[in-house]
Length: 97
Image (cartoon, rainbow, N blue to C red; front, side):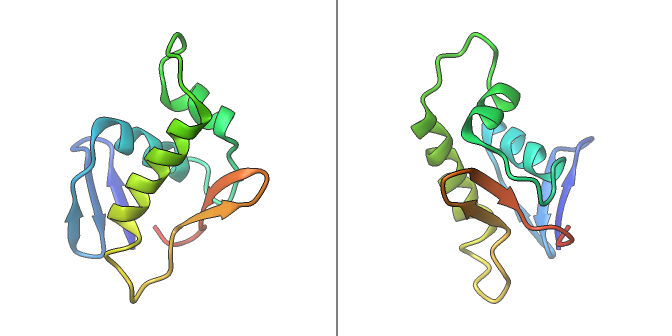
C-alpha cells in the first residue's frame, strides 16, 4: 500500500499523499529498490548522500526516524514498513508496495 512515483516524485500510502524532503525521498527510494534486504548505515550513506559528504552514522538514524514518522506512525492500523535489524541496519518489508 506504499507507492513512489519516480516521475512525479509523489509518495502515497494507501490513498494518502505523503510529503517528503529530498533526502527522505532518496532514502525511501533506496529502501524500495532493495526490498527485504538489510541495508547497513554505511550502505545507506554511500547510496543516499553525495560521495564527498561527511555524514555521521547517527545522521542515518535521524533520517530513518523522520521517514518512519511520515510513512509508519500515522498509519497505526497498518504494519510498520521500515524495520530495524539490530546490530546490522534497516530493511523495508517486502510486498507492501
